[in-house]
Image (cartoon, rainbow, N blue to C red):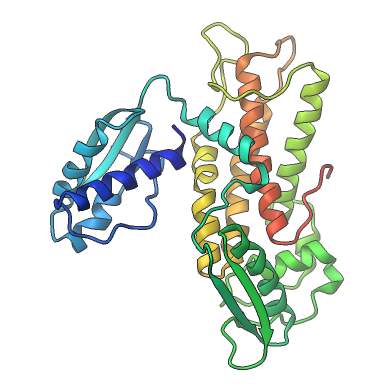
Length: 335
């Protein structure tokens, strides 16, 4: 069961509780599941009971108990434990590998991973001023709205409904990619920085980290092919005694990859491409910690763990490439 599938399962439990009359709330559009926090347990956790408690007029622990009873018998779930003020901690069946499931979903959907129907059939009319940042933001919003089944139109003139803080100067000298990033990465109410920092290839430059992470993933795929193996979703840790048994936890990368559909939906609904840009930085930083462990080292032979890590890295590369494309920025094969 992937995090996306688990999110839908939790949402279904909420709907059942509402239909049965045990909860009197408006069913949320989506439920977020993350790795358990301090004091938590299991594979995933959600704070949905805390979110619903006030509108339901019931204590969070009672809401959590209602939902736990409906989740405990759901397919793919082994156990549900309530901790703290009302967090639901969910353990999946032993045969269910959340990492492999998520990676398979991303591989199957490719560039369309994260696309949904949050704006299905809707037309989003954008009215923007004649200003370079507004034009670039609107262009990105059109693409992002399209990922959620909607269609955006762009017109100019008053009254405007999309007016980010204007660029202090012409960003064109930065080149097309850095110029777009300089205008899209800051929140709309923040003044963009039009400086050469966006061109410097170092860790302090978020655009460089995102594009470098994508290029490194592509390079690892090429090098793995030279070593005679390809990506295959599966457990990241090899069997005891098998080469490649030591590696980083997938959690720092699993969470932002699983969160990608929610980020795209929120960016489309709120007309906020900056959310996509900041999310890509999170994905890039997480995958960069994994990359040193992907290929065999020294006399190691390629193992199932190496193939699984490569599949996870390639899934991150897919998300990075898709996100950059939505922002109108090139995802380089080499850097």
